[in-house]
Image (tube, rainbow over all chains, first blue to last red):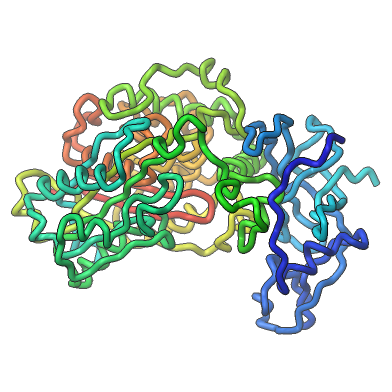
Length: 136
Length: 398
């Protein structure tokens, strides 16, 4: 894999820090409601399903699939390499999605439904969740 | 009960010069459009008692995206208003028009100047279109909703909406050959519009030769930044008899947003918010999709016009690819002429307002070489993409 490209990084705050640093131990986490078990993303102070306030980060399997994708060719940030932007639906809940990149993957293999597992790209304190092919 | 919409007409329209890199200020263009619209409505600045714009925020906003704010234009024209509004949240760019229609319907104003100004071509200069979030201080940490896309180099609405298109392709077998009919149809119509910025004929081969931006969007699927200002006068319906030309009566608006207002968490990627605004509009009128004579539908990216065709019920969900195949149905002489001025793809990115302007012109029968044959009685307008959408239905009066 070529050198990591330039990236705009998230500004960490008390609400999002757990998500963007979760990969430090190799695990992906989402907020989950302690009352109704709904996963809540993006992070919020209360559960939109039941208005519960007992939300806490919970580890998920890190597995999911390509819900949709695009292969970017435009050199927005100066890098000439095409790259895959994907919308990944996480196995744990229908509609729980991340916009992300696919890493270490043959672009010709990419399609809706492709099975994926999480991986992380570290940029300082931030561990960006990305996905790669799940050959399990 | 008469709905509030039918208390309003669009009594006048105006448009400045439109072009690539005019090197004129947004205020200069805005005043040209506003003066033309006020005169077209048979009014003077003394009659204008309301002002409304999208997105507001003032001409200091970067990138030429925002024209002058409503206070600046109010002052330049020395308007004395009873109601004023500007903002970017609401039913897409049409929110500025719909707000004016509500103000007139509520009796807060009798004649509202509504405008939208862009100077994106001049602002971009030779550098091309800038990605969101990389300009100015964007290389610092990003907060808010953009934190979920920018770190993944999904910098542009082109990236976000390409994934909507790709999902549509996956679910319904929609093809690039079908999608190409949107830009090809637009280019054909633009050739008949003296103000359009791109008028050279476009073939399917030309389309496929245009470079890939972000699959499945090629360069010709992306609209063309321009400089220009469009203005409308929203007036009380009684004013129709004082105008020396037919006017557009506001029949219904669509403002609903029921899915999550998010680019990537919206429930149905293939419909987007257009689904909600489109369905809402039809609940507010007895007219039906089959009554529409001309459709002016947002094509910031070609796929968006396809989504609007479905959202407004001109074809079923997932059927827009087949509907536009070959381009006959949407041609000027087809059953549903689409984007008769060339859309944003070829006439230029006047950002929503080019469509309602064209709808009014077609209803009045003054579109010249691109005028749809026969009497145009009903026009549908859709603005927006992703989680942003607004719709309007206009009818001819007089």
